[in-house]
Length: 114
Length: 112
Image (cartoon, rainbow over all chains, first blue to last red; front, side):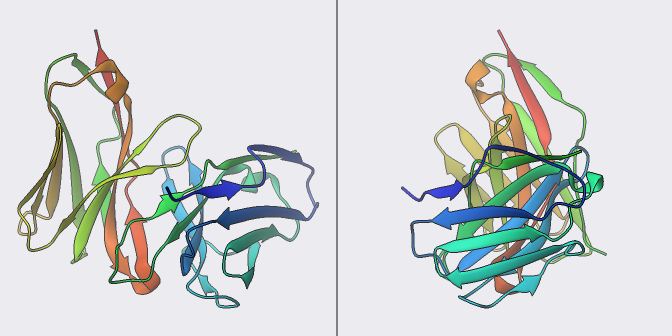
């Protein structure tokens, strides 16, 4: 079974703090994704990566950055957390396009910024 | 711009009945459409994928249809059970880099 793990289930941070969210997958997938999920807005793509050290902006990259130094690990960074970044953050991974198009999600990190 | 619409109102049905959820899209020509299930506080879990050249797909009690003319997919759960209660998301793809575009989901509640 594919397993995607996220470093924390719940996180509380203060405005202005630098926040790191870690995601690890164990299926040697090339593609990894970071989403945030808010009521009424659904899943919105922040960043994705299709290879080590490669990254692409998603639909809402402002205020976020990412790092992919190893194939299995994809980190989301909030440089200076703000209250409007309070949300559920979901990481996902998938094999290369053309093999299967399924995304496998982690359990999510519920981040609260005070 | 691309738009995916799922009924934002919760769907309440009785146990044993067939639940039908709708996913409509505009300004998009997807090669495939996927359905995911999401339980509260958890990540989505993949259920079914249907490609543009397929009309219907089945998996156990689940059935998905895909009408590219109507730009609509229907997701059916037959003989529904309380354990089927969850939010169901549709997703269209691919975008570049195997991206998916997700709908906002419909909450299904199956009552005894």
